[in-house]
Length: 242
View 1 (cartoon, rainbow, N blue to C red):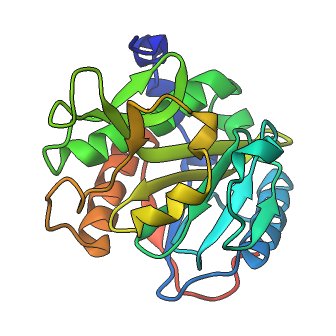
View 2: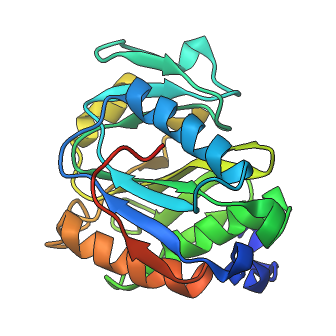
């Protein structure tokens, strides 16, 4: 079933506080997960206090698993990598090299204080990004994230290509999305990704779909689409984000 969030009006999210552009940062080395969480917490607090602009932070993590607020112990089948409990929504997922993580820190109180519409806007950003590579990403009512149909595997088969998990403090968002560009998909075998046990539903990536796409290609598409959905941004260097 297609998710009815696709019918929400997302236009108000393009209005930033005082029209200030969102900062856009890309890391060139993997960031340890605890460091990323600490930096997001600090930046979100600064945004809420009016001391820093909004930020989109693009990065990769070393191989690890994170478990959200709905995570279940049984969904970890093999703790081959470190596992981190996290305050974002959702269940257990994998992060690692070859996966583009985008942590999105926006002032939703200034833009639109609607969590459901915000998640739909993130889904829209992913779907538009995938469309830049002629990949049709879709929402599903009973499954989180963005999915692609896999008729090559059989009738009704679909694979997840992107995950979403968000958290808000004082109406400032953090955590965000993860798009599988070219991760080692066998690392997902150690978990039940997002609690989905139906064997028809797996995990894929852009490269797994046969597309010769690199991280830079995805970053360029994300930047274009983010501007369409959320508004203008500008680059910053790799100094501390807090």
